[in-house]
Figure 1 (cartoon, rainbow, N blue to C red):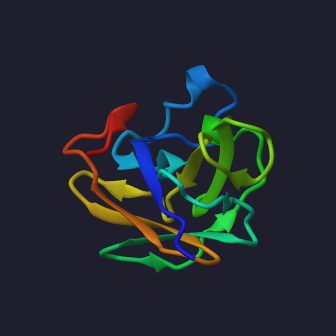
Figure 2 (figure 1 turned 90 degrees about the vertical axis):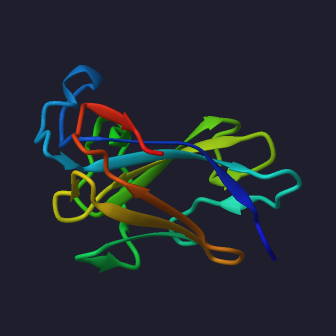
Figure 3 (figure 1 turned 120 degrees about the vertical axis):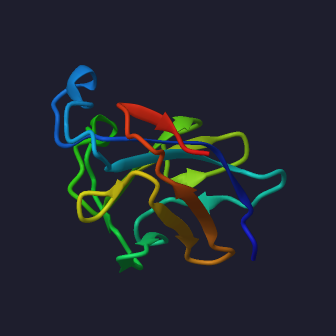
Length: 152
Protein backbone atom coordinates (compact mmCIF):
# COMPACT_ATOMS: atom_id res chain seq x y z
CA UNK A 1 0.00 0.00 0.00
CA UNK A 2 1.45 3.35 -1.05
CA UNK A 3 2.03 5.93 1.67
CA UNK A 4 2.80 9.10 -0.23
CA UNK A 5 4.82 11.67 1.65
CA UNK A 6 6.28 14.98 0.71
CA UNK A 7 9.38 16.72 1.91
CA UNK A 8 8.55 20.19 3.20
CA UNK A 9 11.98 21.74 3.83
CA UNK A 10 15.46 20.34 3.73
CA UNK A 11 18.47 22.10 5.19
CA UNK A 12 21.93 21.09 6.19
CA UNK A 13 24.45 22.35 8.67
CA UNK A 14 27.64 21.38 10.35
CA UNK A 15 27.39 20.31 13.96
CA UNK A 16 28.91 17.79 16.24
CA UNK A 17 27.90 16.93 19.77
CA UNK A 18 27.30 20.39 21.18
CA UNK A 19 25.26 20.99 24.34
CA UNK A 20 22.90 23.72 23.18
CA UNK A 21 21.32 25.45 20.20
CA UNK A 22 23.69 28.43 20.27
CA UNK A 23 26.89 26.39 20.05
CA UNK A 24 25.87 23.62 17.65
CA UNK A 25 27.35 25.34 14.61
CA UNK A 26 30.94 25.45 15.82
CA UNK A 27 32.29 22.30 14.22
CA UNK A 28 34.23 21.85 10.99
CA UNK A 29 32.84 24.34 8.48
CA UNK A 30 34.26 22.43 5.50
CA UNK A 31 31.80 19.54 5.72
CA UNK A 32 28.03 19.31 5.71
CA UNK A 33 27.50 16.85 8.57
CA UNK A 34 23.81 17.03 9.48
CA UNK A 35 20.74 17.19 7.25
CA UNK A 36 17.29 17.86 8.62
CA UNK A 37 14.05 17.71 6.72
CA UNK A 38 10.34 17.72 7.42
CA UNK A 39 7.95 15.01 6.30
CA UNK A 40 4.22 15.31 5.90
CA UNK A 41 1.70 12.93 4.35
CA UNK A 42 0.33 13.86 0.98
CA UNK A 43 -3.41 14.30 0.69
CA UNK A 44 -5.23 11.13 1.74
CA UNK A 45 -1.99 9.41 2.66
CA UNK A 46 -2.20 6.45 5.01
CA UNK A 47 -0.41 6.80 8.37
CA UNK A 48 3.34 6.22 8.20
CA UNK A 49 5.12 4.60 11.14
CA UNK A 50 8.29 6.43 12.15
CA UNK A 51 9.26 3.61 14.48
CA UNK A 52 12.86 2.50 13.81
CA UNK A 53 11.55 -1.05 13.43
CA UNK A 54 9.21 0.07 10.62
CA UNK A 55 11.24 2.85 8.95
CA UNK A 56 14.76 2.78 7.56
CA UNK A 57 16.84 5.78 6.55
CA UNK A 58 19.54 5.08 3.97
CA UNK A 59 22.40 7.22 2.68
CA UNK A 60 24.68 7.21 -0.33
CA UNK A 61 27.18 9.42 -2.11
CA UNK A 62 29.92 8.73 -4.67
CA UNK A 63 32.20 7.18 -2.04
CA UNK A 64 29.90 5.26 0.29
CA UNK A 65 26.55 3.58 0.69
CA UNK A 66 24.75 2.85 3.95
CA UNK A 67 21.46 1.08 3.30
CA UNK A 68 20.34 1.49 6.90
CA UNK A 69 21.61 4.20 9.19
CA UNK A 70 21.28 3.59 12.93
CA UNK A 71 18.34 5.08 14.81
CA UNK A 72 19.54 7.10 17.79
CA UNK A 73 17.06 7.60 20.59
CA UNK A 74 18.42 10.95 21.68
CA UNK A 75 16.31 13.81 22.99
CA UNK A 76 19.05 16.27 22.00
CA UNK A 77 19.26 15.15 18.37
CA UNK A 78 18.16 18.55 17.10
CA UNK A 79 21.29 20.03 18.71
CA UNK A 80 23.52 17.98 16.46
CA UNK A 81 24.05 15.42 19.21
CA UNK A 82 24.02 12.38 16.97
CA UNK A 83 26.81 9.96 16.26
CA UNK A 84 27.90 9.83 12.62
CA UNK A 85 25.60 7.68 10.51
CA UNK A 86 22.54 8.01 12.76
CA UNK A 87 19.05 9.44 12.45
CA UNK A 88 16.29 10.61 14.76
CA UNK A 89 12.82 12.12 14.44
CA UNK A 90 10.49 14.38 16.36
CA UNK A 91 6.87 15.24 15.71
CA UNK A 92 6.67 18.98 15.18
CA UNK A 93 2.93 19.14 14.60
CA UNK A 94 0.51 16.51 15.87
CA UNK A 95 0.26 14.01 18.70
CA UNK A 96 3.28 12.39 20.32
CA UNK A 97 2.96 8.85 18.95
CA UNK A 98 5.22 7.34 16.27
CA UNK A 99 2.59 7.45 13.52
CA UNK A 100 2.75 10.30 11.03
CA UNK A 101 -0.92 10.94 10.26
CA UNK A 102 -2.94 13.46 8.26
CA UNK A 103 -2.13 17.08 9.15
CA UNK A 104 0.93 16.04 11.17
CA UNK A 105 4.54 16.91 10.47
CA UNK A 106 7.77 15.22 11.53
CA UNK A 107 11.33 16.55 11.56
CA UNK A 108 13.96 13.99 10.61
CA UNK A 109 17.59 14.63 11.61
CA UNK A 110 20.25 12.65 9.77
CA UNK A 111 23.88 12.74 10.83
CA UNK A 112 25.82 11.83 7.71
CA UNK A 113 28.40 9.04 7.92
CA UNK A 114 32.16 9.60 7.74
CA UNK A 115 32.17 13.31 8.58
CA UNK A 116 29.57 14.19 5.96
CA UNK A 117 30.09 15.66 2.52
CA UNK A 118 32.28 18.44 1.20
CA UNK A 119 31.31 21.36 -1.03
CA UNK A 120 29.54 20.55 -4.32
CA UNK A 121 29.22 16.85 -3.45
CA UNK A 122 26.02 15.02 -4.42
CA UNK A 123 24.33 12.78 -1.86
CA UNK A 124 21.06 10.90 -1.45
CA UNK A 125 19.01 10.17 1.65
CA UNK A 126 16.34 7.49 1.30
CA UNK A 127 13.27 7.24 3.51
CA UNK A 128 12.22 3.58 3.36
CA UNK A 129 8.98 2.58 5.09
CA UNK A 130 8.30 -1.08 5.87
CA UNK A 131 5.58 -1.00 3.19
CA UNK A 132 5.03 1.50 0.45
CA UNK A 133 7.20 3.63 -1.76
CA UNK A 134 10.75 4.69 -0.98
CA UNK A 135 11.24 8.46 -0.95
CA UNK A 136 14.66 9.50 -2.24
CA UNK A 137 16.02 12.96 -1.50
CA UNK A 138 19.00 13.86 -3.68
CA UNK A 139 20.84 17.10 -3.06
CA UNK A 140 24.20 18.75 -3.68
CA UNK A 141 26.16 20.35 -0.88
CA UNK A 142 26.56 24.08 -1.50
CA UNK A 143 29.86 25.51 -2.87
CA UNK A 144 30.73 26.75 0.61
CA UNK A 145 29.39 25.28 3.83
CA UNK A 146 27.83 27.70 6.30
CA UNK A 147 26.29 27.30 9.73
CA UNK A 148 23.02 26.48 8.04
CA UNK A 149 22.12 26.11 4.37
CA UNK A 150 18.85 25.49 2.59
CA UNK A 151 19.52 22.57 0.25
CA UNK A 152 17.74 22.99 -3.07
